[in-house]
Length: 505
Figure: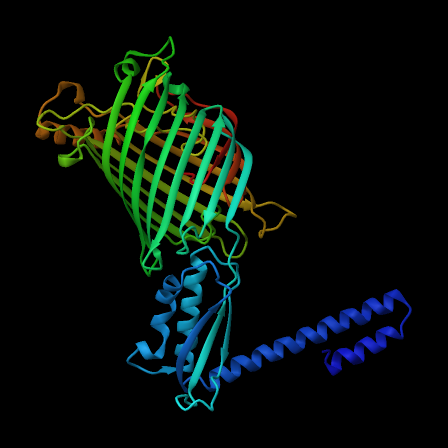
């Protein structure tokens, strides 16, 4: 039913024949209706503020339209907010906050359409057990479709591929997700995976994931093809202050095959099969306002892996650790942002089984450095030790970079398009003395000498200018780079380069 205000304006509009006058009247109507809505919202806020300390009893919570979701799964979310399950009585303000938290939790499962609506009502006062303070809560949560299928093509640094991705949601009525992915490409020749993700105890911040995969990737910078077959299982946990932890186990059969005629002796020595059995832990504390194009905030991240130690078995043994940090600082409200980041990692060889001699690292496990998403101005894996034309990787690395991002004139600072000026560099080195063997004491001493050697010389570095586009899924960069410092056998890339990724230095 139209309001008296709307009836009055529409009557005037029916009497007008001039289109310009009608447009003017419509604009006036929009402005007056908007003002009415604003006053109504302000009145609601005032009523809540005036009555925020009134006692309230949440007598029931009903979730509507969630027909495929298990009742027990939903009850774990909403039962804790019922007054019958609390020792203290709610105030109106506390009740609204708790209902909002439960609704936000439902939203984070990813199986309901957004926004989720919430309604409050008083129960029938003729019921003997009802109280004047009782309220019933109704949450209208429409479920998303059962599945999504996406196909497409992607182009990135020296690679192009076509993919298909299928996602089945709410598989067993408890927000489980089954994701199947397949792709064929120029560098990653084939990749297939099947992953099942399930929340634990109806908690979107506590999940279990199991994943099986197979892939074949051409490593042209090291004259071989790597074939992987295996699986992982992970426990993911997010704390209330936003820290994310991931504990995992992986068992992966790896094969270095398809060697090129020019393959170096280092690559030929690592050719064949190996099996890695490892435990891992990842910690992320991401306070950036936009991971793809941050304007302010910081990122702290660490990844640790232990392979082949004790009961893990397999035929490779090492400890591997990487750390990363990034900070974004805005220059007032100009849209200009300075971002700076540091990364580093080490690969510590361990003895396998009863053997007391630490293993030498393999090409599968060593670090690679250089490329459009790593150290710009260098080819993929262009930094670090080389054997002939092959990039054989290193055991210790450190890298850093700084970017100054500018909004594009006329496009505005609200668009995800930016100019950038950057400088970045790094060093990747092999473990000193690793070919001499020795015990754990020698290995520890060698690792200390290797880490200390990172500061002996200037890092390989490059500078440049570019264009950045931050899509919600990935970040795209076109850069003109100029290598400034480069070591013998390292491969720089002067000129234009194109990069696609979700993590950039």
